[in-house]
Amino acid sequence: MTKSYFGKKRVFIYALGLFLYALGIAVAAKTELGIAPVSTFPYALSFITPFSFGITTFFLTVTYILIQMILYGKDFEKRQYFQIVVGVMFSSFIDLSMYLVRGVNPEIYINRLLVLGIGCVILALGITLSVISNVVIPPAEGAIKAIA
Picture 1 (cartoon, helix red, strand yellow):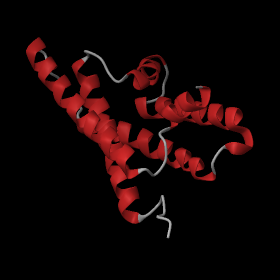
Picture 2: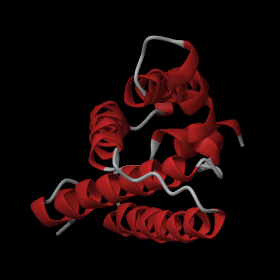
Picture 3: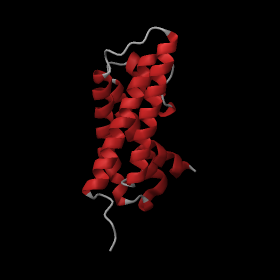
Picture 4: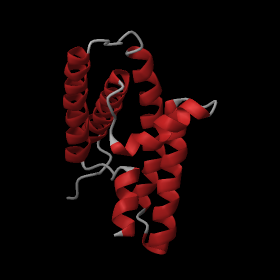
């Protein structure tokens, strides 16, 4: 009997992982010391466009999915279409997380480093949960895999 990629427990763990991934990015962004490389472009775009960090992340996510679809062609696995749902969830989680940490504004450098460390731990936990759930490959990683 084959396990479903979309079992309730797996999807819950994946969604929790996505939320923690987004929260870690938001916490790190509040330190103004750096964020995850995959988020730098949408984060910068959010400052020069009328779109939120989450929306600009979604635009980039769609680009990653299109790259995969073009490169894989007919070999693009049907379950990977779930990346679109993942993109919507992740983008929403980023905007929600930015709202939740709106009051976090460390000013002293040592406090920024501490908050950045906390953000990195949250981010790592989120990535770990997303990977171990084995629901679907994240869009950015999927595009990298397709290019390689």
